[in-house]
Image (cartoon, rainbow, N blue to C red; front, side, top):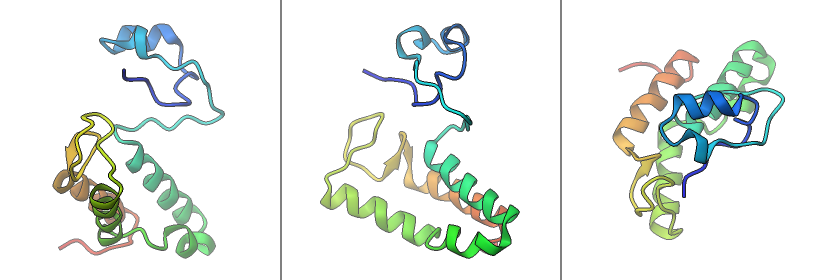
Length: 122
């Protein structure tokens, strides 16, 4: 059974029901103070950290320490191989985030880090 992300209860249930094919069944009823909508919650979290770091240069290094492609892949690999974590959507033990293969997730992560000035484009 799939459910909508926590915090999405901030949006009207009717909007979720109208916009998503299974929206009526999965609509969350738990609101939040500040909603961040993103295709993959990992990307939203990293985007939030990097955005706050850009707004607060004095905190940037602490907020973004460890936000690297290598660290992200190491964590995913470890939890899948030793966890044994599974993809949240497919329930398959694989290097994927929300059904997206590591290669795609890594590309988006790289784009976020480049936009924040945390890595150089190749």
